[in-house]
Image (cartoon, rainbow, N blue to C red):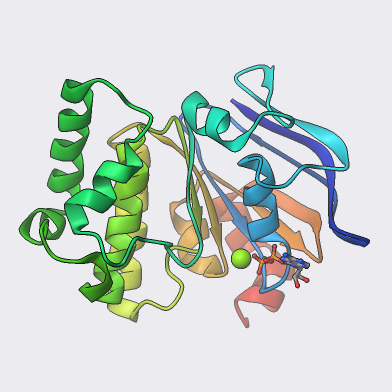
Length: 235
Ligand SMILES: Nc1ncnc2c1ncn2[C@@H]1O[C@H](COP(=O)(O)OP(=O)(O)O)[C@@H](O)[C@H]1O
Ligand SMILES: [Mg+2]
């Protein structure tokens, strides 16, 4: 479904990604794990076309997307929940969700998406008129995920959804990510520093270190890999 083929990405003169490759089959949950500064956000931004690779290419459903503008990428069904959530704090929960569906003109489709988001996150329905900026951290993360779902993603990309959440909420966010993949049937690319929990729920995982993919395998294989255990799990 998605094929990232040996991309190099730089900020000005500073190259951050080096010959990074990644493939995702339809229906998979794939994780990219890596430490702070490894280049995870840069990779997601490049897939979303907010950054352009200086070398290599990206294709989605057999179409080259690496030169498309970001709106067209979203229209193709690639939707990202950004790091830090980036909600509209002075707008209500419902208005934030509506913004997620801005490309969808069909009212029935938008209403169906509201139903499925409210089913997944009942708290968002209860708080639909509350200003987004007054939600708790966990609720804001749910709203960010809900807003992404409102766009009707085929490939849903999460940038460190567990960051800054209390341990209890971390598990519930990973459960929701898994539900979106397994029950709603949405293909997922999950970028995380939380290696254990993301490998546990993913079909396959890739390890990104200093802008290079150094390892990949099934989630289970990565959890049992000596390097991953030493470098990321402290074992
Ligand atoms: N806008 C930017 N300009 C210059 N360097 C950047 C910019 N954004 C990120 N970087 C650098 O690129 C590297 C990778 O960053 P990032 O993709 O955010 O990593 P991660 O998401 O894995 O923490 C870091 O060294 C970071 O300092
Ligand atoms: Mg990041």
